[in-house]
Image (tube, rainbow, N blue to C red; front, side):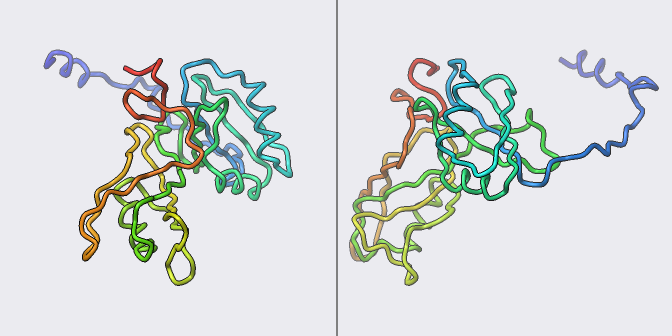
Length: 216
């Protein structure tokens, strides 16, 4: 190992390789590019994907779809409103397999995107009604991922059958079925998680980024 390290340390760029190139290529407007990855090893038919997404996204302006290989695609939008609507209604799936979307920013390269985060609406069942508050939702949601929103009224309460939170999950980790929560005078309780619009996931390990046929 030390021998390999020593050899690598002696590597140098040639005079041609060491030349810097200033790039002034035109770039699309900030925020109009989404990268997507389908969570399946089965080859996705891009033509079918494009046709289906055009019908369900209902974009007012056309958008381009480019194949990046390995079930990764690039979506180039003409309208920021169209792109924002797609992100707002995330997550999406095709043939019940999760489509992970990533909003591209300047300076990023496709090879550096991990495609391991996706937002989900999660219902928390089993809380006492008066404990269904924005603060409780944030506290529980923070143990799952990045809390984007809690479905509560102006006073910070959700008086329905459950407390809904929108959380960006790490889809490379197993889904959580619930949590033990300690609520003061109510004591220790178990609350159930129910994931809205949940796509195909692995019943063996609980991860969303593959099904049981591809589980290691």
